[in-house]
Length: 76
Image (cartoon, rainbow, N blue to C red; front, top):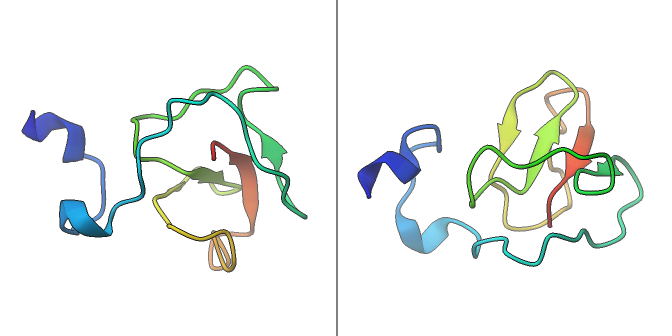
């Protein structure tokens, strides 16, 4: 069970976003829906993949991937 958090940033489970089981994206002003483009999150806590291929576990869309050239794919 601890393997779930292997690639996640150091954070307690309480600060991670809820799991993504809906397989759809909300509308955002930047980035594409990962599911629409046949992209899947690395794990159930990933909310976005940045342009530089880094992963985001942010709880809110504002500022997501701002230091990584923006969002490439959203998963929530």
